[in-house]
Amino acid sequence: MLSGFGLSALIFNNIAFVLVNPNNETPVNGVYPENVNEKVPYMIRVLAAIYFGMAMVAVIFVFAGPKPEEPNKCDAFEQKNTDGPQLR
Image (cartoon, rainbow, N blue to C red):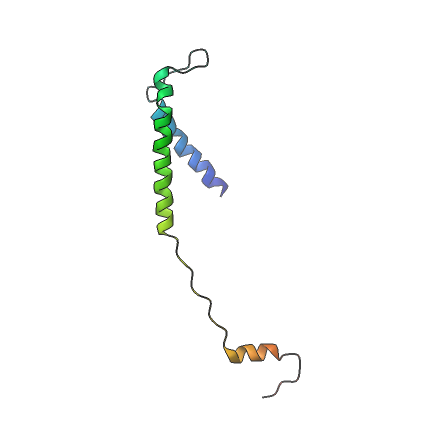
């Protein structure tokens, strides 16, 4: 599970960076230019759509497992009466 979190960050950090700052503009006094700041809501919407799409693909693969088999009534009787003498 830990490697999945690391791989996700490796991929989605780069996607977020390209969406927000495609020209690789540098901050001036710790503040990015206004055109970079304006792209943040767009980046959030795109990433949310990607995450939603991934979740829907995962939902397609979710299914109910096999139903447990009912124990045979004879087997249940033999299991319950193992303390006393065996009559056969």
